[in-house]
Length: 98
Ligand code: FES
Image (tube, rainbow, N blue to C red):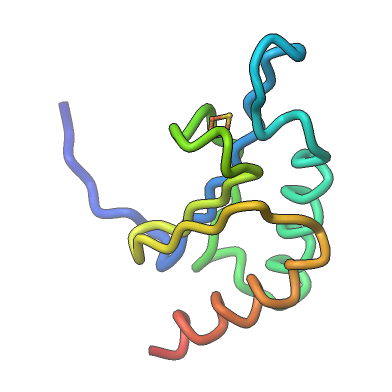
């Protein structure tokens, strides 16, 4: 195993786990759309080399979802909708400036 330092200042994990209605999950919502919109915002701002947006499997707090985790800053966002994207981008911007 080789241990590397993350090349990203922020890694945004968007839980897209689905369970086909068996149990509540973040994928019950339009998280694919949320992830795509976040990716576009990051690209539009020229942050692609510093910020990565990825799908995530279950993060463990399914009842509070949709969940988004910003790593390594330990910022956990719950009940996220597309309307929250401007606030998320503003949060990322502050992290990149710090
Ligand atoms: S399904 Fe998203 S946190 Fe569990």
